[in-house]
Image 1 (tube, rainbow, N blue to C red):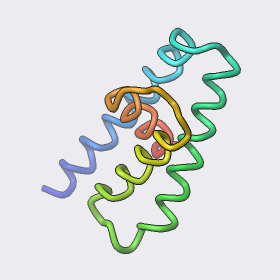
Image 2: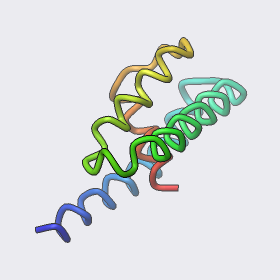
Image 3: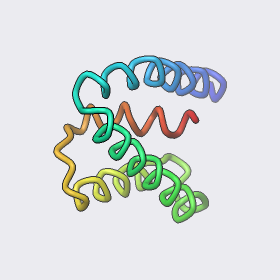
Length: 91
């Protein structure tokens, strides 16, 4: 069962990585997309450091990144942000 869950997570990560780059380029300018991705990566890294031991499911980490991006003023839907988070985690 755990192997199936890990395989599904890996599949989503791969799909997100393939989809996220073209999608962001289409939605934002090159400069803005780089800034958004930098902030998402920073939020993901911070969440990993803060919640790695206490949040095995990743729910708190995801909420942390969503709140972090909202505080920075990025107008991104939760679905769009989910794709970017998955891509950042996959890296």
